[in-house]
Length: 199
Image 1 (cartoon, rainbow, N blue to C red):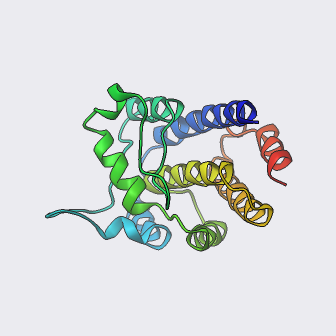
Image 2: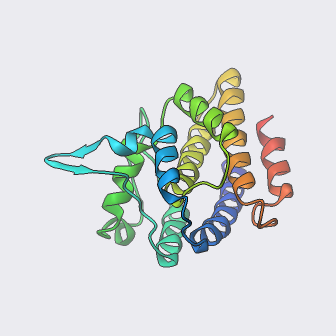
């Protein structure tokens, strides 16, 4: 069972890596200020981050294609996003020691929605949006999807498994729709695979 999960999540991360690389290469548009306003609606916690005496506004981990590559490495190394009963953790000590990882930790701990009700609210907003996601929102949606997949993998209740599985599929569809001008980066075969396991 765990081997199947490991294989499934590895394929999932590969698809996300291709999608994130393509999304990062998209140029900024004049509508970027509008995107920031939409970010406030999708991820309100991004504008309320405070660590010690420092306040961070709209923190983002990926600022280059190299950062996309690094995030992919971190995901495959076994990134564990903080939840109710588990801390933020990167098993690879070399990756975990990188200075840039501190910002990723802030995003995962303080910005991402963690409760199922919060993620359901997010998927509702995503389904109603018009236009492409900003890079910031794309990154957070990908990380929220990773957190949702990890939570689903450790859920035993069939009812809760169905709810988390539906949330995961909704997030997946949001990413897929955001990349519609570039078909193939998140293939329908991967969507079918997720549906098979989570329905």
